[in-house]
Figure 1: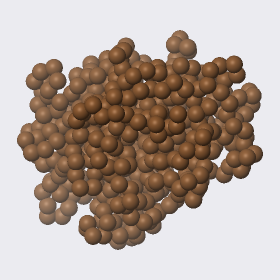
Figure 2 (figure 1 turned 180 degrees about the horizontal axis):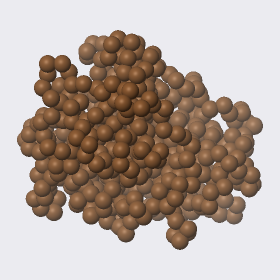
Figure 3 (figure 1 turned 60 degrees about the vertical axis):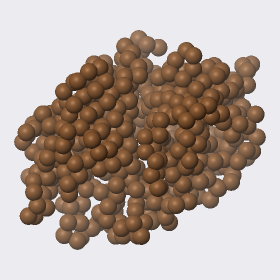
Figure 4 (figure 1 turned 90 degrees about the vertical axis):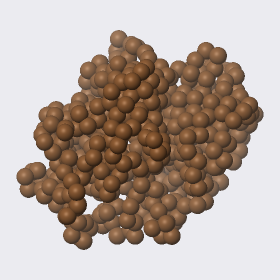
Length: 266
Length: 266
């Protein structure tokens, strides 16, 4: 099944959508946070009647497994240009995500008045190794997407980290499916943690909160993505993302706050 | 009245706080967005029983005037380390803000493992001019706080913008009141828009969404703040903030998405 199908909810009533966390979008059994965010974003755009999730914030409360979920959407404002909704993704077991999203039609926007940045410098996708699912395991997130890390930043997989908290690479959907703004929500939480490229004694960094700004509708083709972390302090880190489309346009910015577990919690 | 008093709500029941948007925290009659966020943050920390708003996102739906408001807080998770709440600030006229916040006790955090950045370079506060309230107008936000812009970045007030979308300066409360993490929410939306230092034909940039990460409890003294914008595209801009305390510790990061009105909307 494709991404668009795997995030599509079915509307039950004014405020409730039935959806399913499909198998295969998980990492170690827990659904990827960007995939869950895209399910929420899809429900919110439908409930608000505006096509693009311009800014969406999710707080991650509990991991989600494959299975049926509901997305409750409460549209708190519906204006001419913007609509804002609160949403929650729940299963029979837990509330997994609470979110806020403001939607609009990006075609209403204006021209680029200031662009102070460029896409990350990446070798051609053909020369970057595709991230493979874990050997011997079931198909998982890495098979649903096609992620190709910058050779320097992919070194951590062979024990050769750069020492710099950065992760750059190409992103597309595995079956060549067209990327839409909802796929940008997916990409904004798709890459391995930045700090895998450092020597910090941190093995996992659960997301506390993720905010993604969709700044444009991506042109067809690969997305060039860069994530970086500047501060690992007080038990938290931020990861800042930039996503550029094949036309060299910034199409999304993201920032997440992640927990850095204490050694006693590892 | 001081900041702590002016943001303090009174608890009506499990989920409702009565509060007041006090006069004097406004800019042109509309309460500052950071001040409103601090009212919400104060209610959320009380409702969750955890002292620090680690990550808070607000979507701004309608400007708020001075007067009574309620803050509805729905605690959706209360764990050992973190609690998460949804909140809304409403008056008789409108819902002004909807917010999500995760709270914790920052004293539970760990040491600094990575710090890739330094406070902005600012001349001593004594040599930076204090931002004055508009001449002839009533006391307003600029009188409640003590903001001193970097001389370069304050030039826009005299028609001499730097051409760079950046705003740096010192921040404290006007009466020398101690700064707590809630005051960081205030500071994260306190400075003039970054793009006042560009030549773009943009006169106002209403906040769509503001996310503030509180990364530390500030040491006493001035806060050194820096805000910058890299992309003004598609009718939106982001403003990224860093707030450092007097000990040289990063205590907050913020990002807001603001609307860039089209010429026809000015």
